[in-house]
View 1 (spheres, rainbow, N blue to C red):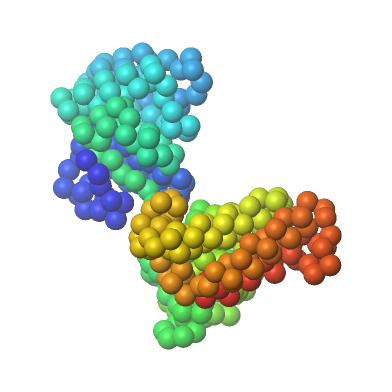
View 2: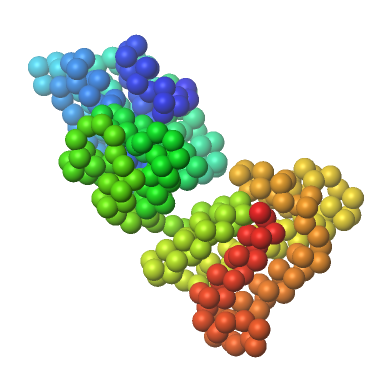
Length: 348
């Protein structure tokens, strides 16, 4: 049974299930969810704990099954913590997890907690994951996207008795904070905690936040695509600077930008052939958040504009591979900045 992370606290107050599966790539939130389950279990008499980390093809699943079926010392209730860092339990593990799921429904003395990374659609459709979902509670940990980061920070500050100033200056402080920690939620949490050590409870000024919060942001090329297609010029520039500082390959950044431009061209060609926008996006495999961005962009962009972007992407492809072009900077990252801002202006 699926359970949203915001609903976990209320669920645990009502009572525990015997099986929980937590999956996602947001390490901080996954750890907090698992800790909340374990703390509730300990308060209800689960005093023993066995922990297993699944590594390699020779992992002993029989030991896990035997632990779950044996009584704890003096008959105490026990927690079985299973971590599968790869998200791939293998053939033996798949069978073992299905067995664990079936046993969980009749065993109130054992609480099994399974931690997994973000799972693709195929894995979530597997027999072993379906069994975990059918017999237990499944909690998907979604990332905190950039737009949701300022209120997330405000909520964390509130939990430790602090808050930003009301009005525009407070919102500016939250935006500054979010810019400094984007893509690094664990570090964001640590920066929030640091403010509690530096300043007393109450209102925090923009100056205090600017002087205290370190730049610990982490970026990837897929988030860069989101910023570019959203028409966010300053954020795009900041992310490109961050990717360069982190040593990201210029050719990979170019690929991400060029792929979005090529997708625009394919969708535009479908529209020219008379297909409705929704059908064109589906046929060209433009899904999720990018689908909404294309729905906004494509009705307003001309084919000659897209062709100019394609030509620009072709020139920058040469630049990042060491070929000079008279109309473009010879330094790859300068050329990438220029290409990205061209797309930003079309998407804005």
